[in-house]
Image (tube, rainbow, N blue to C red; front, top):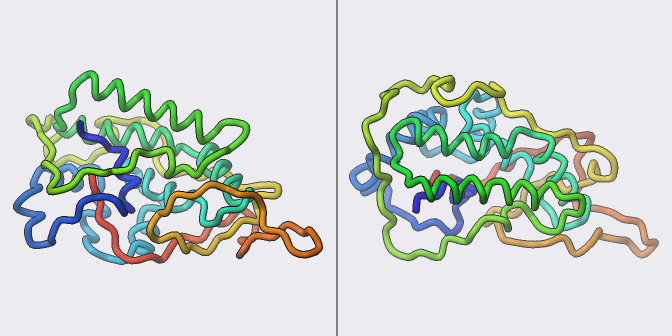
Length: 240
């Protein structure tokens, strides 16, 4: 089953690596879908993550909006405030629409998807939205995605003729927000860790706030206001 969910993925710590020399030959269909749904990323090529994310801050493309919101909103620490900030940022945004519509973009450009796969994907997006945006946040957003445990080369996407061939116009599949809109971080969540250290996307859950000897709650490193620091990690590969 093709799963757009592995894009979390962009970060793809668990995705199978493919040597640069073989990718063009082995994955022409994935490359084409990237050029249609991730045109900014496709044009930039292999550049630092921070540069890619920054370039997507006002992107009209839903797959790029998804990436921008993930890298802007995902928790950088393990305190209660870190996870609350993530919840406010994601759930006050158009993230889950972008997540679903990113898949729609690929389908619009010829990705072959079985009806049962599409229904399953829609159900999983709904479930992740409910889990992330419930009143009591119990887990990190990336923990809601399945771990890719497959080994060996993964198959290229299967495409049918693209009715919008080489046309990246968003209106071909979407008429909603034209840029990513992150939710505002307020209250105690303002005191969240803004420096990015979890470059391997390790799964973790909030054990509680960090406290000092005087019992004062403190994060490891705090942001100011509702700003979020975009991670300046290494290079990324986008996997479908």
